[in-house]
Image (cartoon, rainbow, N blue to C red; front, side, top):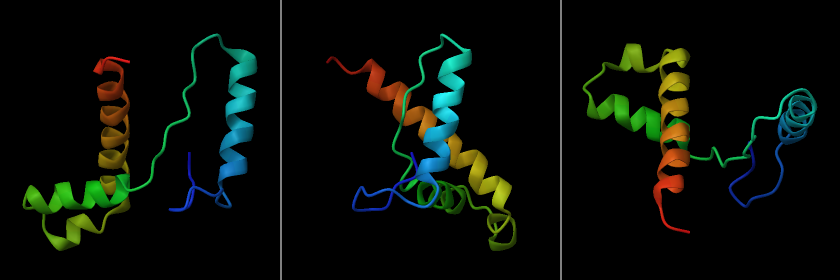
Amino acid sequence: MPVHLDGSDSNFTRVVSQFIQRLRRVTDIEIVEWDERFTSKMAEQTLIDLGVGKKKRREKHRIDVLAAVHLLQSYLQSRDRPQ
């Protein structure tokens, strides 16, 4: 969910919430709302750690792909932890 650092809704939160509601009406698949804060920063740091040059790090699709990886990884790791 796209929220501000203080946890309050962003301009995009309502759009995402409406999409989730529509998606829930057409599928039985569990939809989990997940905090996506800091995933872009984590992605940028991953690219730096991998030695990717500045020019390539500025390409938004690279950040978006790695941010999605971090998001999915954090969700999957949370499911591995005992409740």
